[in-house]
Structures are given as structure tokens and as C-alpha cells.
Amino acid sequence: MAKKSLPLPTLVLWTIALFVSAVFCWILGDIVWHGVGHISWEFLTTEPRNAGREGGIAPILISTCLILGVCMAVSLPLGVGTAVLLAEFTATESVFGRLVRRSLDVLAGVPSIVFGLFGNAFFSIHLGLGFSILSGGLTLACMVLPILIRSAEAGLRAVPADYRLGAAALGLSRTTTLGKLLLPAATPGLVVGLVLGIGRAIAETAALIFTSGYVDRMPESLLDSGRSLSIHIFDLSMNVAGGDANAYASALVLLILLLLVNSIATWTARFWLGRRITS
Image (cartoon, helix red, strand yellow):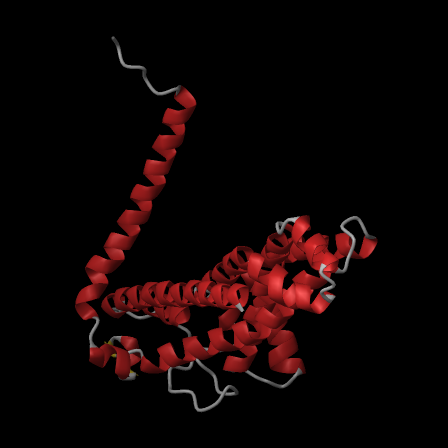
């Protein structure tokens, strides 16, 4: 009996999936192959020398973490709060709700260079923050908010209506229902938004050039200028002759940092979900 062949649409989809996976593995393998040999404890704990050709990335790593921390500290409460307002306290077809959602969809597609120019004009110049980690983090928070809000709202709307009806039948307040039931149930959507936001923020270059600056020394406060890993990689690969080795090593560190932060975010969400449901 002859074996049945795969339908053409299935074959095309498998071919596309394998091609995309192969390209991703090739890029990842190239970065690992050229970068792993240059990573050491000294590389992670010393300052760059000779325009980044020598030395390490300690100030750049600290600046990147501080910028990301400012971004998440601002965008998380604002994003989740706005998502709760849209999903739980605003009618789907209301003029206000449609206006806010349309604005968020437009902002999500705005190029990062535009956010950079806005951050430079508003945070750096108008508010007097200058080229600083705080200015860069606030600019990235503006970029991340649309993604985080829409993902969190989708997660809240995906919670079955029976949860709300059951909570109302038990006499639970709106706040208790939201904190004890709806937010834990919407955790997958919140995690998706958080991971997507972190991924965009941690790899951003254009917006940070106009806000956080190029300085590669160790920052002493959030008002100091700081160079992110993405800017450091761009500078080494485009402007510094002989900087390819450290550029590859910095790119590998950036990938590891992204994987680490995403893993921590996912684990924290699962831990929080378990604690909230059992409490």
C-alpha cells in the first residue's frame, strides 16, 4: 500500500518553518562561534580600553541593566493599570476605549528613531535630564507601553466571564476579584507582554543614541550618561576598526542577558500565580 504524501499546504508550511529555523540557528551559531572564545571573567568585570578593542564591558553591562530597570519600573505599573482600565472599567465599543486602543496600535508601529527624537526633545532637553540613563529608560518605557498594555488587556479579556460572575455571587469586591482572581488568571498574557517589551527594550539602539548617550564609563547615578550593550555592539562593528572580536562577545552577552531576564520574568510570574491561587 503506497504511503500518502503530505498535502502541498502542509509541505509549504514545513519548508518555511525549517528555513526560518535554519536562518535563526545560523545567526546564533555565528555569534556563539566568534564570541564565546573572547568571554571571560575579566571581560565581564573590567572597563573597555582602546575604544573598546580591549578590556571588558562592565560599565556597559551596568548601564544596560539600569536602563532596563528604569524602563520596567515605569512601564509595568502604568501598562498593567491601563490594561485593567480598558478591560474591566471601559466598554469595548465606547468612544474612549476605541480611541485609546487605536492610539496604542499606532504607537506600537512608530519607528524607534521617532521615540528617540521625542525622548531627546522632552526628557533630555525640556525636563533637563540631558543624556542620561534616566532619560533613556523613560524613552524605552514609552516604546514598551503599547505592547505591554495590549498584551495585558488581551490576557484580561481572555479570562472567562464565569470568573467574574462567580466572584460577584460570592460578594467579593471589585478590587478583591481583580487582585485575587483576574490578574492571576491573566498571567500568561502579562508574561507575553513583559517578555516582548523586554526584548524590544534590551536590544534598542536608535532611541538610546539620542537619550542615554555614548559614554562608556561606569555610571554613578541615573543622571549619568551610559552606553547600552546594543549601542556598544553598533559602535564596535561600524566605527571601530579591529573591534569585531569584542562586538561578537558583546552580542553573545546580550543574548544571554535577554534569555536570563526572560527566564526570570517567566519564573516569577509562575511563582506569583501559584502563590495567589493557593492563598
